Length: 320
Image (tube, rainbow, N blue to C red; front, side, top):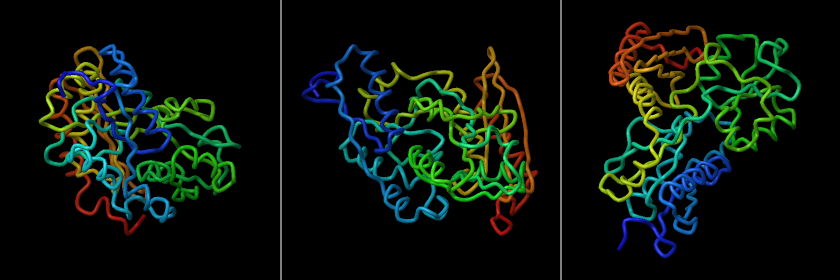
């Protein structure tokens, strides 16, 4: 480009999946960039990219995500398009991102984090505790499923995938009695009204990076790096550094029930972590504090110690 800033003639191309939530996140990114650089909407182009995960999720709607290929299944095509130059940046829900990016790509810009809590959603019951014995709860999250089995082993927990709108329709059709969704996604979609209960993190620790939006770029694109630096939220980055180091130390993926949350108070960081057997029969937790600058080291240390406490085979699926 002849200018450091995008123009309507040469817009910055923002890659995203096509779900309503993914588009809402891409629109938020565009809005923040417009405000930061006083640019018109036409200086940005939102490019919807269909991933292999979108196709397989429709074809194999009843299969767990772990059986379809895990987190990378929904990012591969987007990252390929960025490496080939078809898009300039990609917008992601950070809780769905692998801890490692492909060579040539960097993920170092985060928007201000939304509500990290899980939401209990039901048409006939006000809370998890109010569900009758044997009620059916749907969730695609292995972490939520294991946490539910640990707290309420009497419940029937079933696979329940799709975007927010699809899950709400299934709920209305009586497929399940209740489900869990991220408060952050519901807020970004303007769907707060469907929440029966926002679950305190002391009661249900969220997924690592839940509520955070990350923006990925090419490592050698210094123009884009400078633009993204203007909208990067430093506290969110500090919190995610600890959480994602914790996840990486546990070899976290869609096949392992892991929860983690970092919070900042003054110059200190508090990190809580949790790992669960897939069947909910055992839960191991830890909590530690450190200076903010030591967050990543704290996360790696906590992961190492929890892994040692768990021993081999902790995440095995034969009992799930």
